[in-house]
Length: 424
Image (cartoon, rainbow, N blue to C red; front, side, top):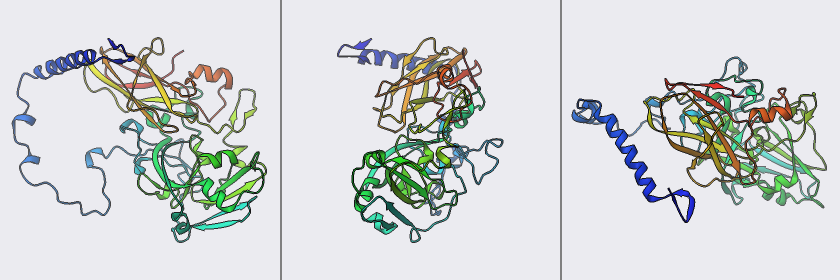
């Protein structure tokens, strides 16, 4: 039953009926215990005396019971930790904001140790006044706050040829979503003065680290929403995320989010550096490569249940949860399938989608205790629909590494455990 004024919105009566059914199921489960629960009927140690005082540690840490919620590596994939990557535990997080301490990191020559006092940012090239900014200079400019996702172009890259990594953390964990604070790049470019017509011009951005990880960005994007950020989630950037200053390029691949930002040069054309020619281009079946594939297309993943988050209860009410995002704008809908894509149900968005930010979705459903082939399918505000892996392979083959935004399948077994599979 739906509300006649909004056919997609459950009516109050349907909601109450569903709540009553869920309550009855839970009550039946509780009654089946047959004996009083001592955790309710008896005084426990934590209620028999005083707890800990104010934490003496200068920086708080999660409780020990959450010690497994950590970034993880894949040994055979990330053997070299200097030029490597680790994975966000997206399976164990709820909401959308990623704590900095859990957010994935990627380095090309290791995370550097730089003070705010040593930091410098140069704006040069086709500008009226080449400028050098200190960190203190940046703090004096009007700042903004925005929530954006940062996704490595290689996220899900190992899955092109088949189901490889068993867990949402490893298949989709090269992503984080944080609230960034900083100065719009256009503010600094305007301070330096842009010479002549900006049409067709580019900026080349590079960091202070030894990797020379430089990327070319169309000036139009630089003037639109790029942010020179110095805070994330209300605190200074972590060293591994570019402390003290990094570039934020909303909706575009993470390699362009240059950390320890050192220089922004305005140019007549792209540099075509190593990281945008031999790397971070998409190799097709015939050996040619797609160029300038910056935007991260609409994508989603069910985080629970999943291989690292098995179902731990019997048949009955359950919540399927996951994340969706798009570099083209806001997520407007997510569909969930329990039978490998044969039928779909529209999930509930925790809140309306935001541009270039993660969206949390839930499907409140019933599990009959049998096998499920769980999938999710994201749709963004442009109307783009997340494709299947077969649809991607038909166009791009299996030789690519980057920009794999295919629909992911988890096989949930009657035991509640799940594994990474493909369906044809």
